[in-house]
Amino acid sequence: MNRIIVGISIMLMTGVAGCSIDLEDFLDDLEVLEITIGDSVGTIQTVDPRSTPLPSGLVDQQETIIIHEDVIIITDISEDLVIETLPDITLLGFQNFTGWDIYLEYAVDGEFQSVFVYDGETLLLEYPCLFLIELLEEQDFDPFTGEFVDIFDLSGSFFENPFDFECGDALILTIDEVSIVAQPERINLVF
Image 1: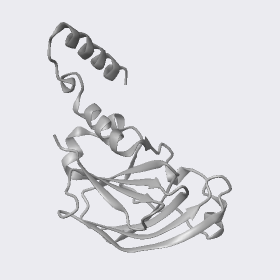
Image 2 (image 1 turned 180 degrees about the vertical axis):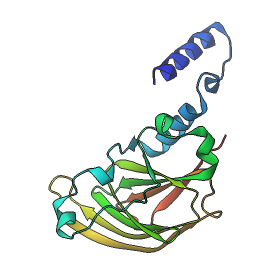
Image 3 (image 1 turned 135 degrees about the vertical axis):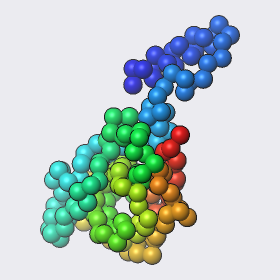
């Protein structure tokens, strides 16, 4: 992050002197990608849902977090992503604007998965290249008490490669309080 500040400072100083310098000349590709994704998703969830206590309402239902063992939870884009592997991955993001903490069930290439996403945050998951993502169910929980609030059937929400995303893309699915169907945003990770 300090390199970003230094780069912007140099750019501003040289701009005053009349030189035209591109910001990307000062940043490596992953830092540029971090800024691009950060502008799209806001707060990245830094808590791995596999290692955090679940809300009481979810525990009462005997639900668990299921994420395939090959999946990497991305908490710092410039540290966790590897530039050479970007063409061979799908970075799947769940952005939660519901006002509640949410438990999401979904399938990737036919495999059941489930995650927990905090209100106002985006959970980023690095998968090997995917071909089909299907949302199944959303459960809402009070962020303060952990109590169950509501449940929504999301089945029928499909995202297919190459129509909705391709290998080397970040697919950010925003779940908000108005729409039950997620709205996708596609970001190309490959430079």
